[in-house]
Figure 1 (cartoon, one colour):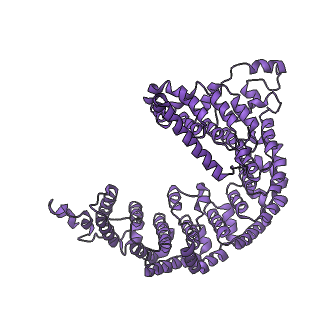
Figure 2: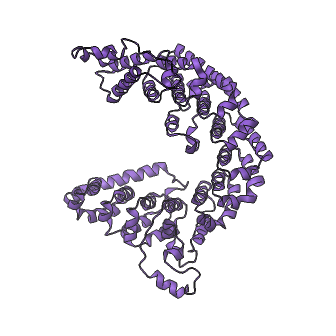
Figure 3: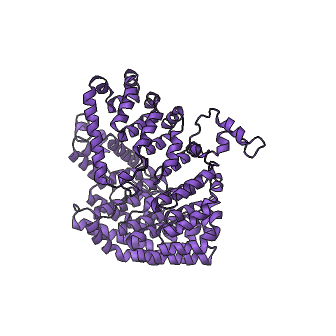
Length: 615
């Protein structure tokens, strides 16, 4: 390149202008896909380095630089995009290119739309261009003639995909283009709803850039593309696609995308597709069998997510209810039951609950905690069966007896039964009431705090009546509460206890009293310091004074600790020691502001007035 023969003095000119190639590199025909000669590769590697350094004298110089490089891609879009290294550089460039440059690049890709959509490397570039083009169509700053050109090219690409829709949905790379087109044509973003197992990391990154729906501009765009989208809706719900979606990891996400898009874009049409899919499943293996299949179960989950309430009731009554327990205990089928619980109506949930509550211990034993958590979430969502749910959990952990209930929180957190936690011989000869009392008196430290146990306790603390769970937590020894506060999973339980709208001031007083003497240790821990912030943010002046009094005695030690210094600042410990009256006034004002904010909101997360919090 000419730029490399310049003298040192001339090389100091604008870096942007050095990327006008003085002599075009020779692109020799070669049977090897993605091959580029050394000169071309060297050029784009220097482009990459320049973008990484991002040391342009001004924004105008950067614009000139991008324009020069994009000009060099004209007519070579297909060949350049087939190179793995250059394709990533092109995606980076397109992200900062002008609307006209993006439109021109898309036009270049359509010179060979088949290769653009089916090539292992180039298809990623095509997907990026589609997403960027959709963003431009929804921007008021883009000129009309550019929008018209982009719309025309998106239409051409859609028609090319429709020529062999069955083949393209089953192609490893074209399938991503079909899914992106479904989102672009409707302006509905659904990629985040699909199973991450069906997308590569590079596809995951692109999914986050699919445009959201945008009211007025959206109406105009979707009306232009409505005819094309209807062609997809007509051709995709066919026997071949249904069969492939239930057996192929490549085709399955396409059908899921169509269902999710239709659910938001045209729900009536979505229900028609659901009926066709259900009929196909009945004619083949049957919905329960598909629910146990690793691939087909994802389609069933999607179906339950978008089906109408009547259809879900019909699916449950005719297909899932007779095998509810079997599916809940199945390593794959349990995910379908989770989706069923999440989308069930109140009456339907009551029926599901009555069956699964009796087998909760077996579900725990199968390690299908997602079922248990889904039941808890539904209890909160529908405001029903909460008391019976807590009782069922206690029975599952063998602590339903009145004298054992006080231990329910540590049992859930460690995911251990009563006998395992206290090291009793379950069902053994020595397992008498007297021996149990002796064993319970031994010092059992809280160990092995689990993520699933933490999540379940957090849900239970969101119930309308949290008395039994709160009492169990406050029954823990100070060192165990401190261990929870400093644990990666357990700390979230203390957060929930401090912040829950269903927990009253007396319970928070009890927490602070029980943790007295442990706050310095907690404050100097990575997770404990954040737990203290949660407790402090909801504490009354009296509670804050108690905490600050303990911490201020060790303020020098806390100041020198990497985590403790945050408490010194956030709790204003220096002011507490030196200007106590001012500290009281500041904290009082903060508490009043928080109370005023809560009064303005007026209703807790459970739909109850703040005045009705449990004590």
